Image (cartoon, rainbow, N blue to C red):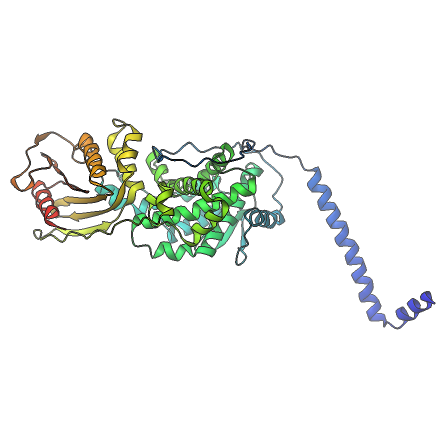
Amino acid sequence: MGGMVKARWYRTLTRGQRRILLGMFVSLIAVLGLLGWNVWRAISLPQTPSPLPTPTPRPTLTPSRTPSPTLTLPPSATPTATPLPPFDIAQAGMIASGVYDARGRLSRWSTPLTLVNDKLGMSVILYRLYDAYPPFVLQLEPYLKALRLWFWEEVRVDPVAQAPAVGALYASDTEELYLRRDWPGARDVLEWQIAYGYARAVPDQYGDLPRLIKNADSLDHRLALAAVGDGDALFSLWRYAGAAPGSAQAQALTGVIADAVTPRWRLITDPLLDDLSQLSLRLGDAFVTELYAQGGAAAVDAAVLRPPRSTAQLLHIERYLADDMPQVLTPLQPQLERGWVLSATDTLGEALLRLALLEWSGGAIPADKIAESVSQWSGDLLQVWNGPNAADVVVWKTVWNSSQSASEFYDVLGEMMPHPLIPGTIDNTTPPAGLLGGRWWAGTQGAVSLYRNMNRVWLVWGTDAAVVETLAVAARLAK
């Protein structure tokens, strides 16, 4: 009876319906055959050894009780490129899924994948990205010049030189992941870059970081927000790779990413430029490592929704957990002679303050002493005036958690001044009548004034000694 029912069912179909049914059956057989061939091909492909060290199991992470002594960046791990068969594009989706699963989070919407044919195509993507979001170094140019730390005639980003190191890149302006079809390097490196790219999209989506960065009220705040996004993405990458935060493998993975995301510069190779270019990545690495030690993955997740307000909170996790906010300082509004214009005003923060002192000291003062001297930072404001004949004068006001910490910072500055700020011979160290109680250095190329009152320190310098004196007096009279 069953056979008769089946026969009757088939005979009720029209000739067209029978053809459709037959076509569907043939297609199913073809799909199953193609799937089997792909599985056999994937198994038969040679495996490329990973350029990263094997992770070392760590049962617990002990939180650091002291601030990091320096912001000196370790050299990035440069893996050896190994030619491989073309990358299977479908694996990118598997990597994305693996990242989200390892992190225990899902992206709120999918991140589009756009294929790039070669390194020239990737250089075009980099050029467009840097046009929308200039590298951090270029944002710092007026302040580095004021700090006498701009040593180059012209700094221009070189996407063509960077492109060979980039196999996959997440671009915040289009919220897309760009992937090179012809990546010739190690397969693991491409996998890490893809994983980091997908991971970097998540904090932008959950925490709305691009908008927060755009509306940040200071350079220090903007750097802290960027570091949170970079650190969160690194944390997801570590989880995906099975690396414990702070482990040798985690640091090697950070090095692989740093090598890809660090801008290259036309006709310039300088460690300071690389350090500044990688600053948000390295700060984010240290922040999430310490935050994970304190509160696990849940604490890292929460930091995207409640990001730090300053780099001091990144450098000292207890200040972030206590919501220790920096003080807002009032700008000076002095009456200067005609031709002088206020050109820049901003808060640089503890991370850049520490970096400036490290550069100014030139190794003459131990890095751990410098780190300790700025560890009690509570706020700063740097203002730059430009005048006739390319003259400039700068006022950098800093506030500290106590008079003692201000005194320690004052003493460290006194050890390294004045030559980082005014070169040449110093022929006058007697403070003018209105600046008694502080330090004074003057020569043919300018002057420097250093003064402390309670928990506040003023450093004033410039190429016009008379204007330096005027602004130093105004700073003392201001609240």
